[in-house]
Length: 122
Image 1 (cartoon, rainbow, N blue to C red):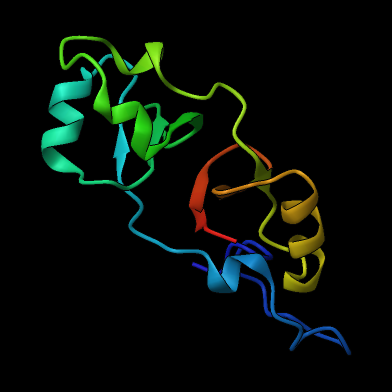
Image 2: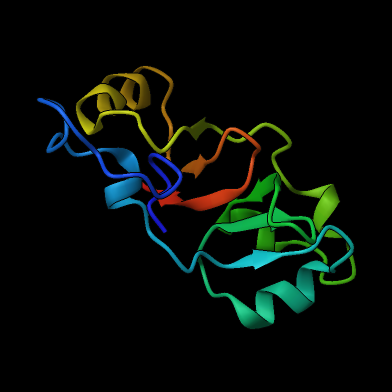
């Protein structure tokens, strides 16, 4: 699906400008809020994990270091409740300055409704 315009074609002089949705990694590891760190760690090795609800709305992000804790602890105890997100239509050229200024290691691309599109590692 073209997340940029909900499936509509891009038009005009900006149609060929690369957007973050074009480069976002799809198939990002996800987990549910009620999962335990040990269960998630068994599935994912040294990658960020996006915490989502049943509709794939982003609730948080667990960085690789968050998976090193107590295996019985809940994901909600180690997740970042406010991960950096970008909308799919943001120009790629607009992202690096923000990422550098705010020391962003992982950014999520989400729709206006918060639905996960993908992950960017600037």
